[in-house]
Length: 136
Image (tube, rainbow, N blue to C red):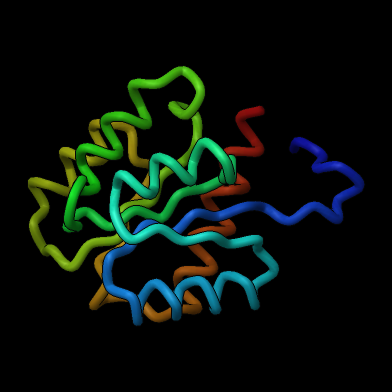
């Protein structure tokens, strides 16, 4: 397990979600769970924030304006600076074809928005961050 500077440093999570109400709820829940959180409304803004915010985990919606989640995921995984950042897909889709495509592109996991509670999200985030730290 990698030690984070004096263990006081919070894991950083970037939420890329175009539904403002959901984005706000996710940011509040993750912040109250002890994470440093930033948000973006589309894939292009998400890519810009990845460079400045340097997240430990990205929660990524698939269906968004400007640049969708699939394109953002492809760009993240295609860049040496960002390919190792874990991505969890957030989707309304019960479209397992797109979900499996996202997983094959390198997403670590996914959550179907209608099927989880905010507490479940915190559990998933903890698991993925622990898995990432275990790889270092």
